[in-house]
Amino acid sequence: MRTSVPLLLLWGSLLGAPLALAATPVQRAEVAADAQALGSQVVAWRRDFHQHPELSNREERTGQKIAEALRAMGLEPKTGVAGHGVTAVIQGGLPGPKIALRADMDALPVSEQTGLPFASTATGEYRGEQIGVMHACGHDAHMAILLGTAQALVQRRAQLPGQVLLVFQPAEEGAPPPEQGGADLMLKQGLFADFKPEAVFGLHVFSNIAAGQIGVRSGPAMAASDRFSVTINGRQTHGSAPWNGVDPIVAAADVIGTAQTIVSRRANLSRQPAVLTFGAIKGGIRYNIIPDSVEMVGTIRTFDEGMRQQVFADLRNVADHVAQAHGGSAVTEVYENDGNPATVNDPALTARMLPSLQAVVGSDNVFEPPLQMGSEDFSLYAQQVPSLFFFVGATGAGIDPATAPSNHSPKFLLDEKALDVGLRAMLQLSWDYLQGVSAP
Image (tube, rainbow, N blue to C red; front, top):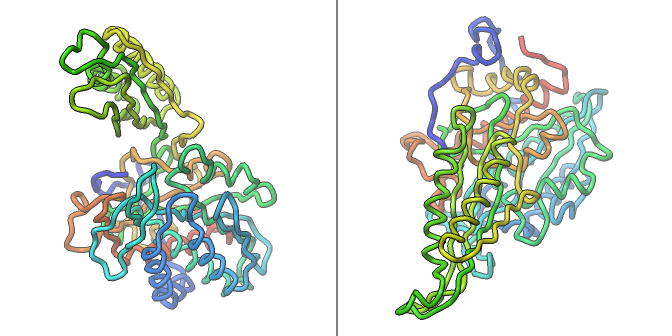
C-alpha cells in the first residue's frame, strides 16, 4: 500500500454540513487515563511481536502470546481459529450493543533493514526459498493496540455497556497457495455465527501519513485485489535458430506491453482508478535455449465490480491473441475466489464515528485520504456488518511521509506515537459506540 499525503479536507463537503457547525469533539477522560497508563505495556507488546515475526498461516508463537495476554486479563480466548487466530469476548457489566475490533497478525517475507535494537532476525520459507521475515506492514502495532484496548476495557467492564469481540486474525497478507486463511476462513468457520456485531472497527498504521494524524474515508476506501497468472506456451529450440521454434519470451514481452493498454485505453478512469501489474516472470534456464513456456504473475486492483470483470476479460483477450500472433498459445488464470473485494466504509457509521476520531487527535488532524490501491481482507467483514476502517499515521517528525519507506519496505519504520494514537482511537470508538454517542 502506498499513497502520498493529501491536503486536509473539510468533512463538511462529505457529510453535507460545514465542519465548523459541529460541536468540538472531546476525548473521554477514561480514554486519556487508560492510554497513558498502558502506553509502556503496548510498546513492549509491539516490540516483542516485531522481534518475533511469523509468516501467514505460521503465526504459532504470535497466537500463543496473544492468548497468554488475554488470559492474564481474565478473558477466555478461543485459539486455533482459522489456523493460529485468536478471539475473545469482553462481557460488559451493563446491557448494550455488540461490536467487534480486529487486528491482523502475520508478517511478510522481507529482510529487515531498519537497524532497530529489536529488529527481526527471523527467517522463514516462502515460495520454496529461505528469506528474512519482518513486520514490514505494521501488524505488530495492530496487535499491540488491540491488546491495550482489551486491557483498558476489561479494567472498566463494570461500566461497559454491551459486548466486545476481539478478533486477532492470521494471514491477512494472504495464505500461501493452496492453503486457505485470513478473514475468509474465519468467517467460514463461523466468526459471526454466535456473535453478530452491529459494527466492526479496524485500523492500519500507514507510512505515508504523519504520526499524530488519522485518515478516514466514507464509502470505498481500499481497492479490490485479484491475483492472476499468464502462461505463454511456445516451442523450445536452440537460441541460434529461433525460426525452428516458437519463442514464448518474445511473446510474453509483447503481452506485458499490450496489457498496459487495458487500463490506459479501455478502463474508464474518470469513474474509478484501476491497476494491472505484472510482478514476476519466469521462463528458461540457459542463455542459448529458447524455452517451451514462460509464466507471468501479477495483480489487478479495482473499485468497481463491472470494471473488475472487464479487466479480467481484457487480460484474457490480450494474452490469447498476442500469443496466437506469435504462433503460441496462452493460459490465463484469474484467482477471483482468492482475492479481496474493495474495502467499503459504511457511510452512516463513518459519519457517526468521525467525531470520535477527531476527539483523539483534533479535527485538523483527521482528513479524507485519496482512494488507496492497496487491499485489505477486512473488506470481507465489511460485507457482513457495517464497518469502519481507518489509517493511523506512522512516520515521525523530521521525515517527509511522502518519501518515507512504504509499508512492505525492509526499511519501514514505525514511530511509536502511532501506538498511542491507535489505542486512544479504538478506545474512543468503542466507548462512544457502546454508549450510543452520535455525531452532533
